[in-house]
Image (tube, rainbow, N blue to C red; front, side, top):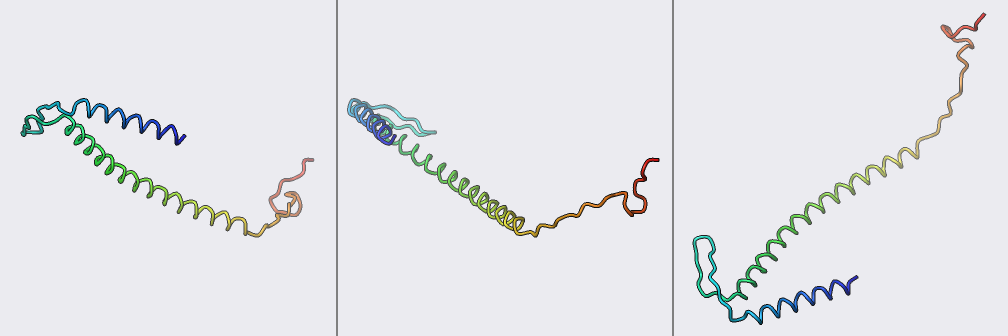
Length: 114
């Protein structure tokens, strides 16, 4: 599976490099909020967009990591509690209940039919 991942990464990188070399001299106008930049190379715009995307992904991943880590610690704590409860229940002494006949000697017990 790892070879497929690396092959796909290499082909995406090669396609990106081909695209960047093909459009190395192309320029464009970039409007960012109220600012306007004239004659900016397309490849710089692509690299900047990629860099901002990586930084955004990094921060989102950090928040997800802490969220998952917190949930995992909650599950581990609950697992420890349940394990201790199981151990406590296994160590309880077994008490045998002696069956008693309801008709024998109990006041208010059921009477035998006549």
